[in-house]
Length: 364
Ligand SMILES: [Zn+2]
Ligand SMILES: [Zn+2]
Figure 1 (cartoon, rainbow, N blue to C red):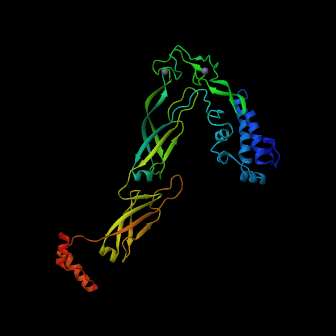
Figure 2: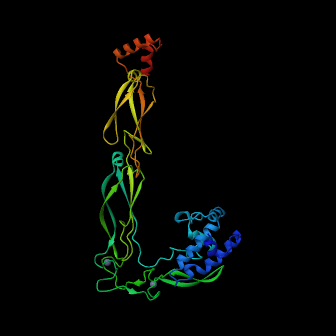
Figure 3: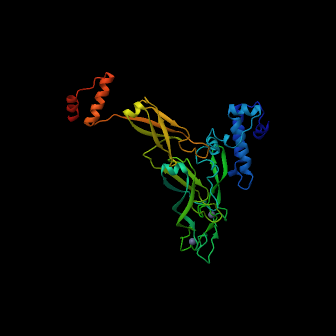
């Protein structure tokens, strides 16, 4: 397990300072911007940056020394990415270009976001929904080339078709060659002298589209689904953008959603709470369930109906349905009801306000 040390050309007991120095020296020599003719440069440089990323962090270095390996997402996280490592070493955006900043060749299509509104029941069941939106399509007149039929884009004379230009740049590490997108052709490598009249040279025209989206059961308000390659068309040879479907779930008056669980409020009378009752509770999937409310149920008691909640998104199982009891205390009583209740109070030994006083208070 000496590969990282070998890559940086340091010994296993090298100090953090030695490692930093070694990386700085290697990064300058191997950075892809400094080696525009070497197609392997980026891969080589990434390997070195990976070695530095691990060995410059004492905890990761210790783990590496013990024989742990690091893959993919573990890497480049402490600094927020490779570009950030480079920025630390080479200054802000004015220094090295980093990767991804040099855009050459045909441009990828634009991402498109659309919003769909679902009821809570639809969110629980999942559904396929046809959505309509506008996005760029390849221009049918010029087949995306941007040139008027009968004409072709010509090679950019500024960059010779490479889409990028080299420039010498002075940094604190000394003078070095950097690469920037060609401004004449904006990185495309070609220039359109006779633009297509339909798309005015863009190669793309916006049009209406419809796509059927499979919305999985359990989506929540704010869930975003990504449909790769279903967004705007790119330039010829470049991939289309992605379509993002943002789900909005409208409130349901019967249920409050708490993650995967649902809450339903059931109203019962004082006699029902006291003597017990049976309730029919609605379920989100359209059915219902009998709930046995025992005698002596107190206000605020919550009953649980297992698996009566929302399906767990892209997992098995579902949440529970919680049913909260609200006991309705009558605000108005008929003479007959009042007689019955006063009789009950008398037997219980309770001392309710007398009739006159109660009327006064209610009439206030
Ligand atoms: Zn066109
Ligand atoms: Zn150019």
